[in-house]
Each structure stands twice: as C-alpha cells, then as structure tokens.
Image 1: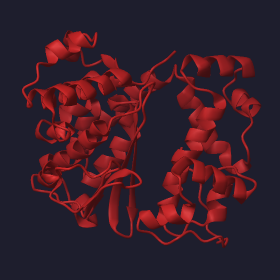
Image 2 (image 1 turned 90 degrees about the vertical axis):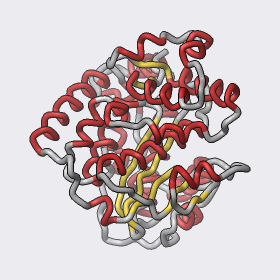
Image 3 (image 1 turned 135 degrees about the vertical axis):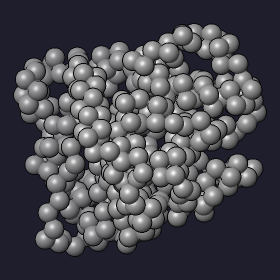
Length: 351
C-alpha cells in the first residue's frame, strides 16, 4: 500500500526546528525506526505518519505545545526542495505562492495548498491530511509559520498578514503565536490560512530572476512528473476534475480515460491506500472549498461543477464534510452567504 510521503528537505527543516528546543533528533529518529542519515539525501522521502509521530514525540519530550512555530526560525528556500528556488526567482510573492501550490506535492504529499485573491486580499489556505494517523496541529502551524517567515526572507522586509486562521482550538498560552505571526489570530477556524494584503503579495521581489524561474520550473515540473507518473491516485484526480461538471462520474468512464480496466483501476487504487469512491469524495470536498472561496459563486453553480444532479445531494454531502451548510461555511470565510439563484457566470474546475 502506497503511503503519503514528505521530502527529506522538509524533514530536515523539522529537525532543525526541534533541535532549537534542545531535542536530540538522532535519538528520536532511532526510537521511531527512521534513518537519520537519509536527511542528507535530497531525493529521500519519509512516510507522513513518521513525521506525525515525530511531532508527537517532540511535544511529549519538550512539553512545548507550540513547537511547530519554531519552523519560522529555520526556514530557507532549501527547505522547499527545488520549489524553494523557483519561489526565490519569482517576480512577486503572489507568483511564488502560485508556484508553491503547483509543486506542493514535491515537498509533502500530505498537504494541499490554495492561493487566491478575495475581497480581503490574498489567502494562502492549507489542509493537512493524515495517512493512517490523523495529522497533528503542529504540522499545519509549522507550515503557516514557515510560509510567513519565507515571505519576510524573500522580500527583505517584515510582512504582516491581515489575519491568521488556525484550525485548532485556542491554546492556554497564545504568546508564542503572537510572536510568530504579529497579526490578529482566529482560532477554531474552518481551515488554516494566512490572509495577506494585496500590495505585499504584488510587490516586486529583490531575488526575482526570470531566466532562473524558467529553469527551476523545468526542474520542478520534471521532478513532479517522475514523482506522479506511477501514482494512479494523482491521475484519477485529474480526470475527475475534468469530468465532474458533466455529472456523476462513473468508475468505468475514469478507467477508460486512463486506459485501464475497472478491475485494474480498483486494484491500483487499493495499493495506494484509497478507493474510487473515497477519491471522488475527497476531490469534491477539496474543490468545494475552492469554489466557495470565490465571491459570487452560487449554490447551484457549485453543485453543478461538483457533478451533483440534485443540489440537495450536494447540501447533504457538504454538511457531512464540514459540519456546516454552504452558507454558514462562506460566512466563516468572511464572504457573502451563498445564494440559490443561478447566474450566467461559467466556471470550470481547476485541474
């Protein structure tokens, strides 16, 4: 069964963050059955569940519930594998974050990123998925702190978000969060996110280099292609995103698009730890988050784009995904409640 993995580059960043707390990561790796020397191999990868156990052990040994925030103090482009250098050569932070979303799976397969412009500014949203173990909040908080620190490092000046959304409950001691983010904090948020001023994201970067950006895009694209080509899960998601607006996707249709028999498709997905129905549900949920963040998107449009013939089926699925109605969810994001009215706008899903 295929596992979600994390790059050695990102794992090395976690190790540096834990060492700031005085922890002996070499001993911790041995305790968890991990190869510490693999951190020096840029192409090595670690199972996502092993990183989850590493965070859990670190909190247990240190007593620091906010230990993930240490990542802000050690981040450099190298922490992001080849993606970091693509970010560094981008014209703006907005362009850099668009690259980060595109190549995120190189860094860690367990995280899904979104980056979009809304009424409040640019929002960098993060969803961390577990593998066999549920993800810890430390993983998401480390990523948020790391992203903000990278903004300051790349721009050469402090970047202060308008808001920081944290999915976890408010901890007893929020001082480390104030120090890490210097921004209004929203705990128990529907998702983890940094909301930035538009001007900060669109300002030119001093490290911009168009020729190097093209080169790093090629390297990152080639790596991602090699990394993804053998994973049916990734290819099924791409097909689903393309055909969902045509109605309820059939396994037979997806199998034909991939030139596989239904039985082979089912077996390959099982080997990668998922199923067609589970993948369909996950893809719809992730797309629903993207669509509801778009101002003006109606309930009927969203249901249609997700392949639901009956909007009531979409409504029920949404309650199951987020324990809220679509309107309640959008209100949490600070947008207008969803309308049932149809508008002439035409939106296609993002592959």
